[in-house]
Image 1 (cartoon, helix red, strand yellow):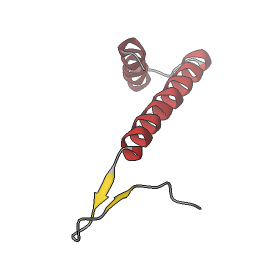
Image 2 (tube, rainbow, N blue to C red):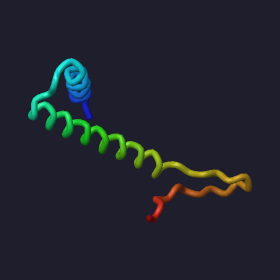
Image 3 (cartoon, rainbow, N blue to C red):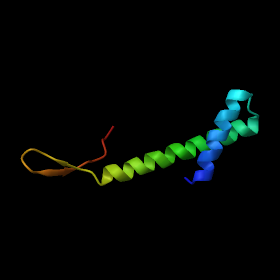
Image 4 (cartoon, rainbow, N blue to C red):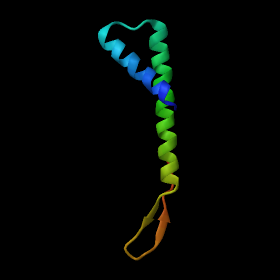
Length: 68
């Protein structure tokens, strides 16, 4: 997510504290927040896929996705 979208999220958040947002602004805010969440989840997943647990005996185990 680029900085201009993050700035827009912040501008909408400030505006919502001062006044009621219009339906278009509220929809834009929701869409931008969802995009931001997906970006954070993707970054975290990427980091975890490259994470290795080193046990006291020296063995190394890659982190795996938990099955639900």
